[in-house]
Length: 298
Image (cartoon, rainbow, N blue to C red; front, side, top):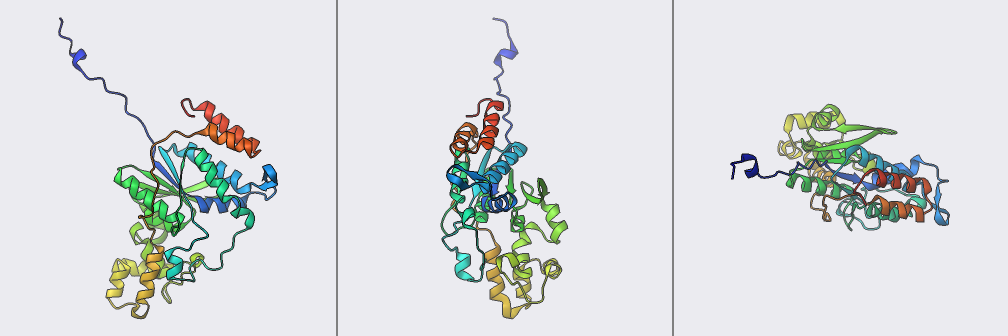
């Protein structure tokens, strides 16, 4: 039998090209969608649907742009306080949400599931915590991840393998990597919780250190490296424990119970059927086109 070197070679399957993981702050974009679209958008039963339509269109645009291997959407549990609220009662105090927005949150989670994506939600945790858990998961798998959020606190999750997509105006995004964090705040991503503790965060009702603003917080961290470093040096002795609490509040909890996240194909047809049942014809048609143009997808 003639010697054929080619016959001895093992057949190697072509490398599978996969995109990054994608983690989304569901509450952030639900709020943006609700306030961006007319309240006259309704679904079956004359129920409000602006947040559903806006969020769905955002999710589909983001999927088409990033082509992720898997998608996880983090959600707040609005009716259960977190340790942040218990430790600092003023945290996020005064926030009120329209009833029509609250009524759409269960529908948004149903839509995410219909698309074949993962919802992450548990009592005592915020959406941000699940984003941190997703970043930790991607790091363990040595994979890249894109985090979509309108909350600058997520800049603490940035690294060489994790990028934040931050909305700057309608349809436009800033892609935030380590260099962009330094350009914006003059601190490193890992210094962001210390930076927030010192500067404060009006949106979360965190007052920060007395007399310290954005530039002062960055200058202190440049000099001392960390909040603990400056406290050990005797700075803000009377506020030390409160500042430590603010840092803990600002730090996203990567121990949040993230459901299993596996590489998956979107189930666009199932999502289209759900949209049809809601009498959201335009959304259903868009999902059907996605199903038809991507062979092998259910």
